[in-house]
Amino acid sequence: MSNHPRQTVPLSAQQPIVGWRGRFFEDFAVGEVYRHPLGRTVLPTDNSWLTLLTQNTAALHFDAAYAARTKWGKPLVDSTFTLALVTGQSVADVSMNVMANLAWDHVRMPHPVFEGDTIYSQSEVLETRESASRQDVGIVKVRTIGFNQDGVVVMTFERTLLVYRRDRGPDMIFATPKWDEAALKAAGVSLPQDPA
Image 1: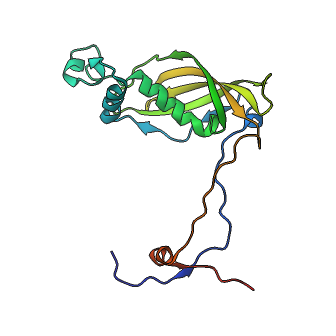
Image 2: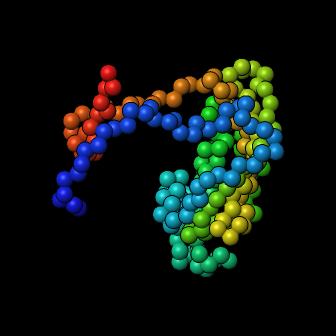
Image 3: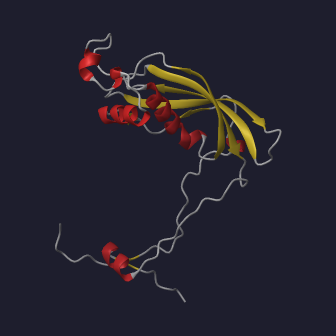
């Protein structure tokens, strides 16, 4: 930590730019493939916690001594964790503006996931159609795949969801920072000067 006093600079008068809000129904096109931006390494803690939370008593997921005597030689990651992780990775591109999930279909796990694997994912738009009963949403169907650091596909599924049309869903809430004296001092900034 430096003991030198910081020079105070004025805050920008520019309004913040709102970040990515996700796709609305009108933004999906059949055949598009979205490579989801974040990978995630599965930790032993993830596997243990999920089995405890869900009361999954399969020793293959949490007992390393038992798992060492199986075909795999080490703990397998609970497949419902992989399903949740791959679904979560897809949210930024597929379902940030979801009204509801309608179905997960054809969930398949062609290869196991192990503690220490890093999972990545992508989704392909299979179908878009109007909702017959709701004017504020459309129906989108995607195929999502999860794969590990070596490119091995570890999960595939199709998901059907209701997605809001642009400007038809609930508004996002954006709080505005309130700069009091303590916050200004801590950040080393001052309020912008009124040009008038």
